[in-house]
Image 1 (cartoon, helix red, strand yellow):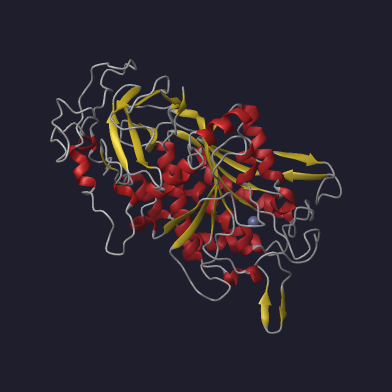
Image 2: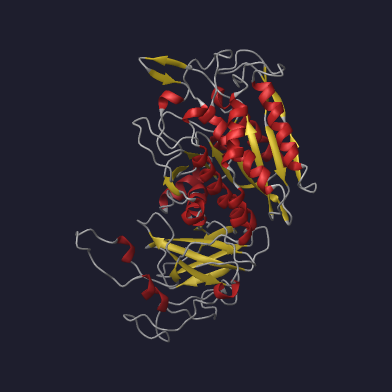
Length: 507
Ligand SMILES: [Zn+2]
């Protein structure tokens, strides 16, 4: 529905058409009202009356379909209109058009040319090892930054990791970070990363060839290609494009990056790691060039006991900030523009695996992982060799550069849409001080320029937001029982960009 080119078609209050729902009493007597016009929270505050007229557009009650399967979306009905996906603005379309598979190929091939990028490999050999890779990535990022008019800066923050799991001797861990400063809300930060370290079969083997084309030169290529394309642009919020080290040894680089951001007091509202996004071919040979998985954790591991207990008691297990981030990506990454379908997976990661989003989750930030649809385990974490006629090893030839370009466009849609939208509303609460059959929500403005808000809601068994109610001010009462649906609040920017939604906790 949203088209920034025509903001007037999206004016808040456009849901105030007064045609009553066919099966409900006239608006004058209906209990189903939205009281949000004045921004006052007090129950009974006079505001615009919103009928459920548009609920009819969501589809009439259909009952069980021919297959006998119940359509859970049909109950309950309520205020608002069906949520239609936000559309890409003109600049995002231009960004996506600039994603170049040939440049992605050049990055992946260059990274592979360093022989190994093992975290324990040489840091000062100019040709082989992780140090050469680090210096090349930094030089390349600085070349991009030179076109940014001073808005992008490149640093190589590092620290010495003392002996620990998979680190036998003190080892310098270096990240390469290109920071594109937000033009109007620089304190709000989004991160996209890939890890530039690689490994062979033995995770402690720092000398054998470890090409790491898919794992994870592909993810580094996504972050670098986005840095190149966005360097000349002016996102409202800050975006960090990072290549981190130490992933295979134990997420050391990403842990360091998350800690640095916490110490800086950065308001990190979204992080994506692209890790193993290089191949569209599964181990059985089947190809799926149009899917990318996005792993999004449910119950946050960072919440304290009281908060977690409340979340459990109110059925908030499926509504962590990371799940909202996943729903946001599914909404903004238009397959007609990206060429890709985002396959949300409602879990932290694949079985037995980990990734650089984990330290961000542990730091309390929404964070998610992009990964190809079906992995070929002969082509990751394997010594390069032929065995029984089978080629093992993470070689460039198994990568699909057009596929990586598609993943890059998905990341572009996510990051640009986040950075151009206002920050998420803060302190979103639902009033539970008395037993009622309606829902009163209130919140505080987040950062960034906000024009209005929207309440989104869905039946509890539904995975994605389904309905949207426009609101002015920072509170709203919906004639819709909080007991029966999941509610959320999102901010709307002056150009119509929407933030991710926030799930309310009891006041
Ligand atoms: Zn990896």
